[in-house]
Amino acid sequence: MKKQSTHDNEKVEVKVKAAAQEEQMEEKLSPEEVADMSDERRTKEGSVEGTGDSAEATPEVELTAEERLALLQKRADEKIAELQDNLLRTQAEFENRRKRLMREKEEAVQFANASFAEDLIGLIDNIERALSLVSADESNDFVDGMRLVEKDFLGVLSRKWGLERMDGLVGQPFDPEKHEACLQEAGDVETETVAMVLQSGYTFRGRILRHAKVKVTVPQ
Image 1 (tube, rainbow, N blue to C red):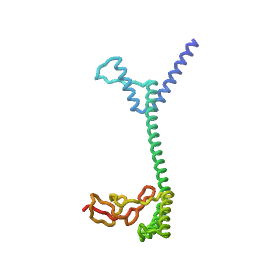
Image 2 (tube, helix red, strand yellow):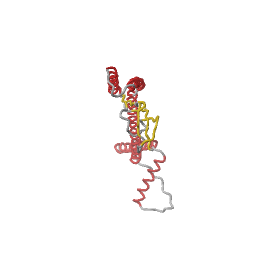
Image 3 (cartoon, rainbow, N blue to C red):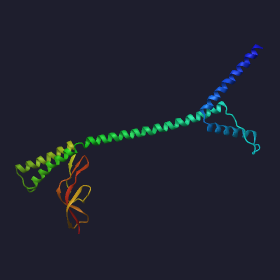
Image 4 (tube, one colour):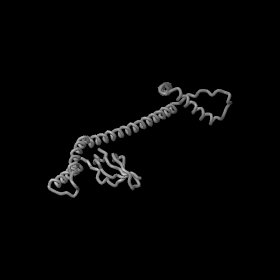
């Protein structure tokens, strides 16, 4: 008799624990989720028992602990997937921003000396003006020395600073991206062509620092 009573008490404790677990799960589930799970369970039971009178209302079906656990697991998986997607997006945005900042920093360092390079161009212009006063075939110590200074100066600026003079423009097609037309004349050409360089143009690390001022020959 005592064993029977102990056995009954154990059954009661198991039922109480199961009921408590179901109540905790029910508190974590929204009414919509409980309703969806109930509909799914009624559908499964209806397929086994057969269709009844459609006019009769279908009674509410209480979710089991396993069904509630499955629903909670589904909701947790969806939340995890959403968080992972947000994490990947955030990482991609961070990486793009880091690359952009690095590129801007490199450009800032490269072109920080642009104003200094422009000042040097003024010195080269003075040397060119001095050499333009003599003929190209004239040779003496002073003229040869000036030409050597100009050549070495341009070489250092090219190697050390990335400053390049636009040479060999005469006879080339006119390019508004590089040239500034100051004069023009009609001639026997098929397209606008550089006829004379009035002031040299320069590039600084691949960018146009100063457009070349030129005389352009246009088609008649």
